[in-house]
Amino acid sequence: MDSAIDLSDSSKALSLPHIRYQLIRLEDTVLFHMIERAQFPLNPTIYKPGAIQMEGASETTTSDGKLLSFCDWVIREQEKLQSQIRRYQSPDEHPFFPDALQPAVLPELNYPAVLWPNDVNVNNELKERYINTILPACCVQTGRPERPEAQENYGSAATADLACLQSLSRRIHFGKFVAESKFLAAPEKFVPLIKSADLAGIDAAITDAKVEAKVLERLGKKAEMYGGDPNMDAEAPRKIDVDAVVNMYRDHVIPLTKIVEVDYLMERLKGTKWE
Amino acid sequence: MDSAIDLSDSSKALSLPHIRYQLIRLEDTVLFHMIERAQFPLNPTIYKPGAIQMEGASETTTSDGKLLSFCDWVIREQEKLQSQIRRYQSPDEHPFFPDALQPAVLPELNYPAVLWPNDVNVNNELKERYINTILPACCVQTGRPERPEAQENYGSAATADLACLQSLSRRIHFGKFVAESKFLAAPEKFVPLIKSADLAGIDAAITDAKVEAKVLERLGKKAEMYGGDPNMDAEAPRKIDVDAVVNMYRDHVIPLTKIVEVDYLMERLKGTKWE
Image 1 (cartoon, one colour):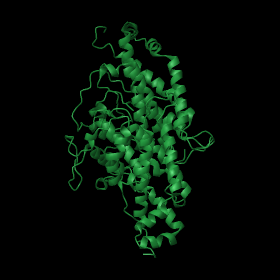
Image 2: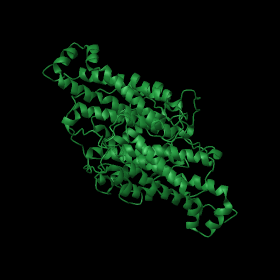
Image 3: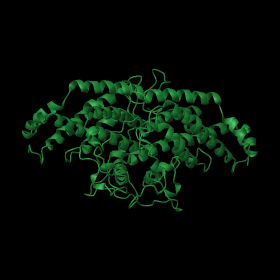
Image 4: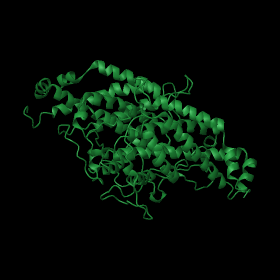
């Protein structure tokens, strides 16, 4: 059960077997949360800024005045609270609303500087893909009609969305550890690519098509296993559509992870002897 | 995937097959959350009032001055926020800190009065059992040493605790729907038992030993399935101890559900022709 990676130990944090173990374990977390979200209808209204009146709510816009959807408001209020318990001090956590973060109520922890200083954060892109593509595919099941909106589930859906988005974000931004580990193992390969801003070359250098195929195969098996029920009929509807989960990884999680890796590496030479 | 029970429709909310379906589905939710919590060490310090200084935190005591543990503080702050999005308007949700609830920012929903007015809430008892018995059993694995405290996981552990406690609480308080359904099906059986405050008699009338054995058997299978990994070695450590999960249901979830059922029925005659 020791699957929470120890980021306070830099030798572990950058060991590829440790990172791989954590990424595999995070697949389970992502799946558990997506299965929970799929209990509720899509409820598209909760993602439309201004569509739901929130009477008496504090801060219904971002600090630069952008109107929040109901779901955004829930995420942002949660990040206010979770920043107080140090969530965003951990190098594998990235906020969706960095403008909302509050001072921590716990003393600061001393994480070793494992990653190179960077401000890579693809959460906006992730959230857009989640709302527009990932969630619609996971919330309807092939051959079954879409369920109507249920106001009773607005809060539950947004709360489940937060858990899904946070686990996806964590999985995707783990790409920074992968990239750092690969960079340290072969700087002579990466430095020239980075210096010439050869994004396609970096992407090719970090891509392992065989590993990717294995991830998708494993994920399909897990979606079968966790989305089923040991006591259900073979024909009974499953808790989540297997293809929707596999496609989510193939079309979004893996590509966004690579964007994180490439973007991170593009900042990797700043302040080094190679700059 | 339609497993969120529709409590806005009283015929569904009190249909025993519907309730049973929801209870079975909630087993998965409970298991998913317990598996996530078991990633982290037990971290007993977070449950001790006053053991962790929370600088600048708002309301580190309940409104009647009781000092909160770190975990309690996280739960209470979460309930403040979740009450704003109507969590506790739903008849199957019960707060751990009723003193903290805030006005909702969404308009009130009209749930039909499915349950008889009552104030049964066993969350204090649940939380005590969770901290002292359930969690220690689920966070250590037979034959493996206990993991040391990890300050880096204080926030993660408390956040996971909230999800565990909320799903357990929802499962246990569903006993109210079970009790109401059984009462309406046979008031002639229950009224005399309630009138004579025959708690043992009520308990016997609501107990079905065969169903309970089936629940435990099913739960063990689920813990095997969700706590494993389709690609793991047969000898690899599992994500959660199967016996710990089965014992949690046998010794705590089922007995607390029965307490809810009995307590609810003891309030069931108030204001009726049978009083």
